[in-house]
Length: 127
Image (cartoon, rainbow, N blue to C red; front, side, top):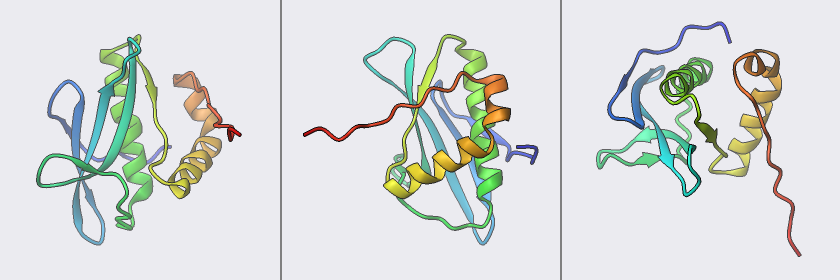
């Protein structure tokens, strides 16, 4: 992923904000939420709503998905540098998003694995 990232602001320990500029300007939020497991954080991402929450189901279709994804990877680098023991988990909020994330990880695996240890969990249907 050699494209430039958007600039972003760290709003707090776990919240990062940036503007997606394409067909329109959309404020995006990346948030790292603590879990019950020490040093394990859930990564949430989506459009920032006026009440400060994330809409992680909206399809912005703003024409800048690669630059948005490069920005998220840069934010993960920043967060990881500040929290070297952190493990970050994420999943798509929809089946389509999970498939998109899977394709991206496969496409850029060689680059990602130079910086990150990548573990994939597969949910098996329970009877």
